[in-house]
Image (tube, rainbow, N blue to C red; front, side):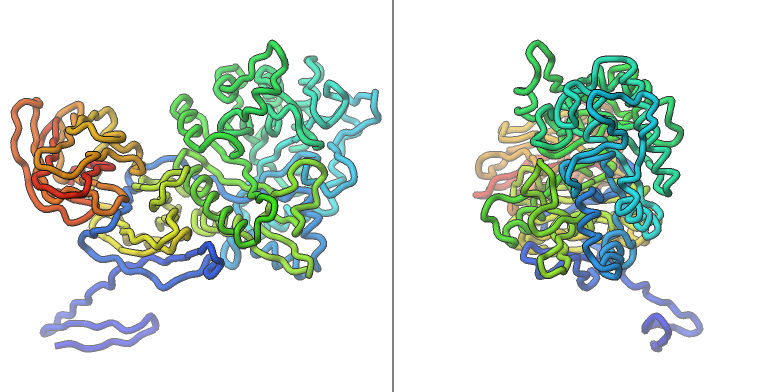
Length: 630
């Protein structure tokens, strides 16, 4: 028989027999927030999506919480002098609402990382550029008697203290655009470099340490410090900047390290790849240092470095993984990227272009390449892209102050929000298959994190202009979803959704194929955006063969055909071998969709061969092959 029990948390249908009662547990569900390119949905929470058991014909994002990567520090932007001035144009009530929208973890997006200029940058509301130890031309101040952060006490520091009260997990990185002019060749904040004098290196290190002490005393502790913004930008456009070759940065860091107690130092703080203009501006006879972060980490100063900071204005995020692989003991932080626009772009074009580029390259590209933070540039600007004093005239912020006095949340608010609101400080990135590229290939791409509370945040971006269906698989649970063209979504999976199969590492495995086809033969770290394709219609006998490098025991083989719909083998045969000569057929079957899971009894083999056994006009593609122990 059955009876219905109503209570505080809803209605539960119980099936009973005699004196026993068995409640069927509800299917777990994921919560979903979506932002669309047309602003129709802005971090809008849709109806939850229930998981089910089974498989899908759609491209399937497979999440593996057992494979972990970097621990996250946070996501945010910069309260520049300009941003502070814009926020202080608001009434106190408006300003507090704006700060809550930014930093409150429940009612806002929970910004958890700020990068603060040490002195003036191009985004300065003052009439003149400044540092914290400016003296008349021709004078020096080696004793730092004129050091003062008074400029920041009126607007910047109160905002920083309010941000910390709204989000106590907030981390702050500080970066100088220029040392005081008296320390530089040319005696100017704009251009030049540090004077090549040990006394100057020592004074500059003490200047930075004094800044940390003063800000801490003012209620704003500094978690991270870099010694120069964009050290290869030797020709800043009318705003503070300093060329700082590796040897000078290393000399300052070696002196600064012993002066700091809790603050960690990050090196470099410039682009993924040296900008061609920075190569061109290299003084005659000097090394352009296109491998700057590598050279710095090979100096004795590396002992004081927690890692390296990157910007977005040249190159692509894969540079972060290349550096990580060379120096796995050092972290990667991403510390600056501004939205921008061209002449004549409409607000709608700017929103769409910024949302999609940042989703691909920063939200997903940076974090899938070992980045511990994603930090945009200005947290707020006015509708003219200012105020600014030199530098960028087309930059955008997370918030825009409109001429009528209202604030508008723009694309960067939502790209940062899809991270900061759901990926908590201390979260760990976990493995997930992704089919898109940062350069755009029209596919679904994603990144996944396990939060300290056990929930999983999965961020998905549909690069295509058309809606794209996909599935999400965790262990034996699966959900299906369709995301609008260009949209960005965050799924929060409950703690009850866990992975049971143990995935085997295929590090060192090699593969061959017939025909040779196109593309790489095995995915790396779940990157299924590149794939092997037959390059021709399916015919019986085409195969992909994998050498695991050693005999392994497994119970499941997953053959993932990636994001190109229909590129799966219509029928297949799996053969295994221990020596590569004698083969045994382990399984055979029909393909029904992009992901084929082949379940086996415990099987020991070193070699696998997946063979197409029927004809089809479509190509056969394999984006990834995964093996599971159970």
